[in-house]
Length: 293
Length: 221
Image (tube, rainbow over all chains, first blue to last red):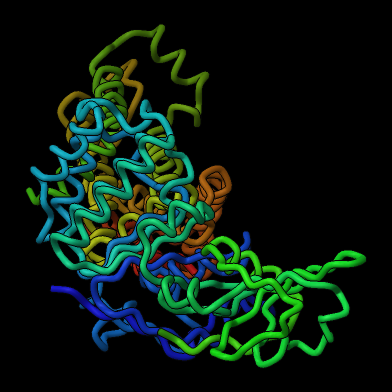
């Protein structure tokens, strides 16, 4: 059964520094959500908090109303950390057995078959696997758990382009088949745009943007015009500015598009997800965060 | 045996084999009557003394890295995001070292009891079953120091060092706390043999609970 994930006022403090501050979002069931942000922006903290590995300082994250650090939520969430930890002395088959021994709903045969398809020898010890193969094993274990929510921290970092495509295809198939929710952090924006339908953008510990990707891409425009046309007020006509780049003569402004005409000196262009994400990360203009999806 | 229990033994198989080798070594040397061996053992002194070697092997070499490595390599995250409770995983993971430590202490005591005649010349070891409670107590104390250090420190090498230091100092502290520093106190009768087990076993129990609390509530932060 699919589950809805929601967070209210989620915050995590490390000593004096806030790793995550006041995050509020809701993810409906069956979505594939991309979690993006600069290095050190709080993506891993957010994923670890959702996985129940880190207790939030403020607020809560819940799966169908149950806080995720509670025992009842354990079987409903699968998590693959950035370092893809596995027991290096175990063989791949023993790792699969570990998954089966620690999860009642674990799909032992399916997981073993999946690893065989990827050409990973089940009798090889984890120590002798390549980085990419280890990632495949870690992800196969997480999917084998048959959890309602799957959290993947940088899953594609050490995969070759072919394996990335295969992984994303596998994720899509799992979502279609079981209707689970997948939350994955990555820097590979173009690949994310193909498979994800929602986006959470974390910047400096705060959730800056959250929404459906189609709405985000459709809701922004790139305006190119003479530098005099930009007043510097944080708006171009009725359109709130997300980021601006100016040269001596020309201004390139990414705006949140509202259904209003724009000064004819501006040329209006459609944007890609990458443009939107980069503009929000640069964020030269202070803008209020978008409302949660 | 449950799947997790089997995997835990499997993960620690090399340490199980090393423990078997250690017991076999003591049994063999107890069985041999040779002036050469007796001389070598005498010169090796504390380095082969079972009262030190057993606790340091189980505590520093086995128990301390067990929980420290989990944190250092991040595999504790893997365990904590499966469906079993943290405590169930922890019990399965530390059971082999506790069971093996007690079994080795008992096995060595039984071997010495059977193989060594009182007053035999060239016997290199002494103390049979009567010493078993004290051996169990000290080996459990060392294992619990190791598990506690591993849980709190979370890094392998410092945890091993802390365990060695802890085992070399803590028994004296415990003894001073129990008999008020009067080392001439010698309990009599049957109590004599169990005297060491009470404070060492008690301290071990406290440390084991503290290690479990540390692992299940505070790690990972």
